[in-house]
Image 1 (cartoon, rainbow, N blue to C red):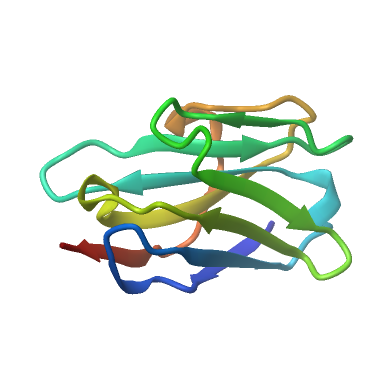
Image 2: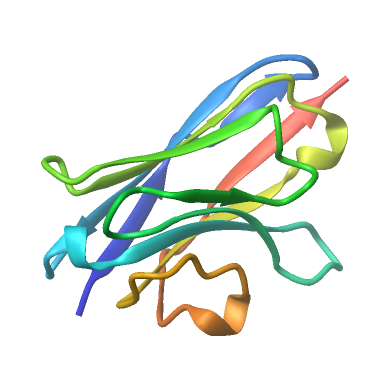
Length: 124
């Protein structure tokens, strides 16, 4: 099974940018569909972006469209989330997730493997 470790979170001013990374190990990364989710205190975990396995098709939550970009480097076994124009409401713990599927999965229940999360805090 795949193990996932996120990094790249931190404190950033509103309007700034961050790039999150998710390093995968223990399995063939290219076989997995991948996603990013986030969870703010007191709220449910929500979908941010997903990328599929065969041709790197992508899907984004409305809140992420035009500001975030999901990508993957199968040679480096790494998933990325480039975030720009960050807003206060983007503050959350961000999680990467993996599933053995060729389709794009956008639900929490659709993923089998999760990282431990990385905190993103946007300040005014």
